[in-house]
Image (cartoon, rainbow, N blue to C red):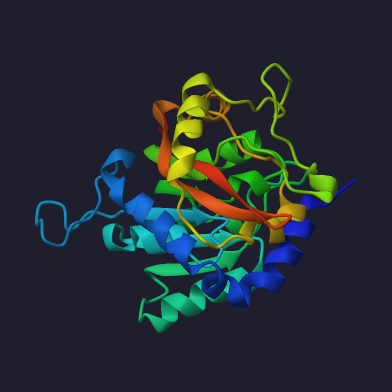
Length: 283
């Protein structure tokens, strides 16, 4: 049986030190996508220029945080960010970046951990109050690495306060990259049971096809390099919505296809992936 967590840990431990430099353009463009949609996310963000909400306490859980993409995007609008990642090297890069910017640990800090392993008991080191009652729990381009994304939605939903938002940025269904070009993850089809039911939704899929010509990102080897760690080759709107609803975070659910795509390289040819952003609020 494949140990996907271990494969992801090994890959990202090995790639962490060069991750930001290799994929800087795509990272910055995804940060911009998040920032321009901050009102859509639906949080009462802090605003130092607005005295009425400058004292808000807005806490972010940046899960599968990597080097801190989501934390960087939302840093101007939150009080604190807590990153969690399975890769110790990614956590090191996250914390080094925050330290180099003069950000204290009380405002931005990451730790090594796994909150979404459905096969083991919860890690007691994450049972403290500092790991609960977040205003936002976000996963930026990590959902397709999760073995059991439906369980992940439930596990992260538990970490939100009432009214908190689960935010996901990931890809619509697409062909996987693997040996012989067939991949070894899943772009699932509707009607299967459990977590294996991902498919193109009519509106998201059609819109995605229209958007493919408007690509961004020239970091063409990002997906190829990590192909062996991918467990799901994209998600459709109706399946993400089902995960949200079953996790109790489906209030005000919305799903938007981003107007720009991410470009990857496969067998010497460029491919564009259409990305989405989903949000839902905890009941």
